[in-house]
Length: 179
Image 1 (cartoon, one colour):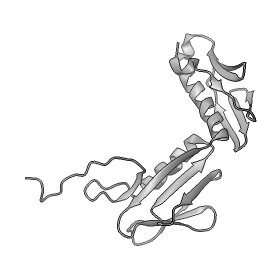
Image 2 (cartoon, rainbow, N blue to C red; image 1 turned 45 degrees about the horizontal axis):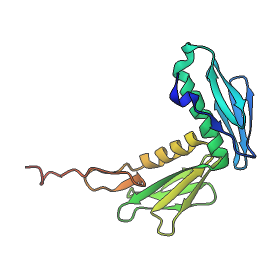
Image 3 (cartoon, rainbow, N blue to C red; image 1 turned 30 degrees about the vertical axis):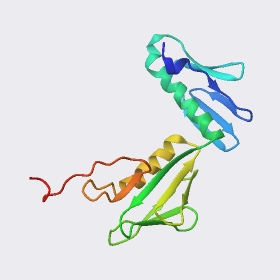
Image 4 (spheres, rainbow, N blue to C red; image 1 turned 90 degrees about the vertical axis):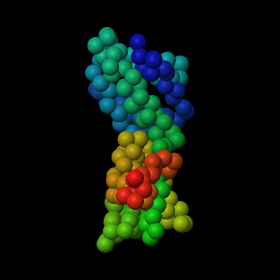
């Protein structure tokens, strides 16, 4: 049996969930998140927790996945999810334009405007080189962070670009250093 699939999901006070076919709608203090349930997996409530159970061993590959998706939805509506990005480079910066557009200046001939999807908020520090992406849907937060990082990936030779906070880069030696 799946180790992750067997773990119960604690349901905090104020969180409600409804199963409708193969979708789960989780509602909490921060908002609503829907998660898809694979066929053959059902959710059972046992004394304040949710347990994912499978019908037979054909769904073994999806057991842990289903539990993780529901857990991420519950965690998102209670605490939320965040990703942090750092912008490294001379003249590289980021700023907000209105409520839902982020403008990156990354050394190109033009600034890059990045529209934010619904449900995602961005906070920028006063130095304009660090931003925090927050939201209730873990997949959407991660995708927005990956799309922002892809605007200017970290350069292995100069270590410039957009990177995740805490990301370790291996600096390569240029032409003159390779002997």
